[in-house]
Length: 321
Image (cartoon, rainbow, N blue to C red; front, side):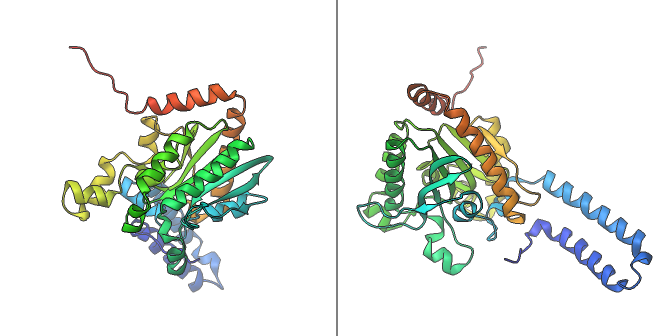
């Protein structure tokens, strides 16, 4: 897929075009352009490091929404040696916005569930833009119960703006489906590792996010609401989305500081869409490490620590004057 540059990346594109133009102009005498090329390439490297080292929260949101960014099934093709997709909630139907099944990653046999978006309009319609219906969460719960029954670690890949907010979801009880998942995930006796791959929006993300370890990719976000939704409520105008993104403390550095996530997984420079393979290898290595650590705990200790982890969210220290 051709990588469309984001707005803040355009200065880099201009420099790359200049370098290509000089190479073309001096293709038969490239030595003559040596000093000029070296200067431009040094400037490009410096500019790239400066931009990606100082990304604003809104720029990170733009990166995770890049249509070329890898999604759950893309990661599975790269890291899962044997993936068998399992379909349906045995109640209503099969929601393709949330996929899952048995897989082997490294030496670990696991159950994987995750949100799935599309890379083009046709795929997005098929997967409903990653917005899962109640049957998607009920399918996820069915698969997690199977994993718990057979002693398989659970890996959840989170990447959704939120659960589908339409009438069909309300008619089939979306809030109840997510609430049951939250309750049941606390009871499982197997390790659960959640990875926020891109967007982690509201209850739609949390519906598969109760885990012993919550990991997040470097440019991903995890938030109670999207920046646009927050801006529409607080400022009555979605144009204030960049301001909302900063105020929400939704990016990986803030989430790590607030102890809402356990580890930040590095991405290739410019985002995971720049190198699917490098991003997938990083995810694989970190997930396997955490599963190995969690398997050292007995069942009761695992559940107690999981419960304590989420009970500690939102703790504040009050000053005594």
